Length: 330
Image 1 (spheres, rainbow, N blue to C red):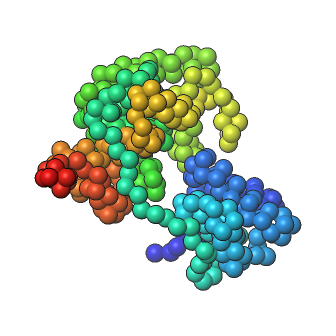
Image 2: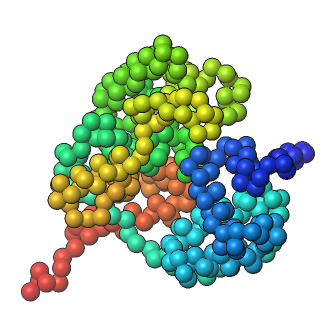
């Protein structure tokens, strides 16, 4: 079987336009495109802004990444993100894969147990969230979704008949299936009906397109207008798509839910460091406490390695509930 020819960017384009061209060819998310471009520009400016990356190499990448750690004090995740952007640049854009192993000064990644809410804290938190933000927060906790997985849900991804949610292109580009909580099934169904009505109005006004993968858009020209492809949580207004320049209805901005959760935690008097991801951590921990098999939980969460899922066994209430403090024996 012959290898598929590698995509080559247009050599007449400027470097950053070539980067965007390759990112879009490989269907990278717009957020990833922005992040990779920012890191590539920082890399170029780190060496004065006048040296083309093709004239730099692995040692320069190593030097830049070490600088991020020693001077920038960035986290391990941030350093890894920068490395991924530069590996992409050299491998897929410049066709000059980095030779040898990159061994920069590594940012220390200290293992920390996840912050988890008990059920009563989840109830208190939800009591201070309203509207669709509450519905979204319940999906994070009830289905174990990541923030952007919830934000990017499409109508066709929710199966009310089987009470399932299909996560498309999750972390690592993987698809998976998780549960739709019966507790919010009717509420979510009513919400989707309202979204469908909004979509019909958009169509009547000459709009109604939504951003979909470019390959599908080319193959099925009307797919972007179909109801199934519409976002479950659309923005209140239409806006210009940054890639196609078409007027579309994008999904909601994630910062709205992030602020709602943070504000609710303060109002509820919960002193733990809480974010949207805390709800996913709580889902995983509470499922284990209910006796769900860890391999099943791994599938629901979309973890590549069960060791990632095992971290929740360290914060399960069941592990320490029956223990007695030596102080209580005095």
